[in-house]
Image (tube, one colour):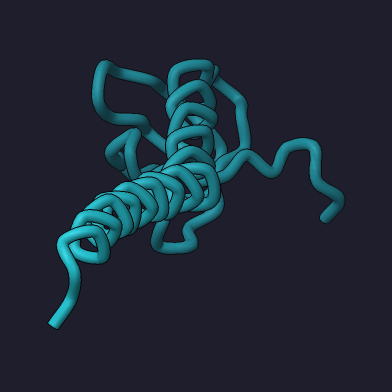
Length: 104
């Protein structure tokens, strides 16, 4: 059997253990936010900026891998010329890349 003093000494140790567990959970969430959530939010902001700054003549790529040149821009859609006298209408959200500065 434990003495009353030993039992009293054991109680704060359990409380300290729960604090360290809580701190560890908070640190894990912080690390996950720094390495996973924050970069994804930054990438999404860059894509939104790219889509909002589109202008006629920009070269783009769709999610499906179709390369083309912006012909006309509407609120939610973009007409892309993919060949001579061939154009398609795609959703702005499907545009993923601007390769006008890239070497071909």
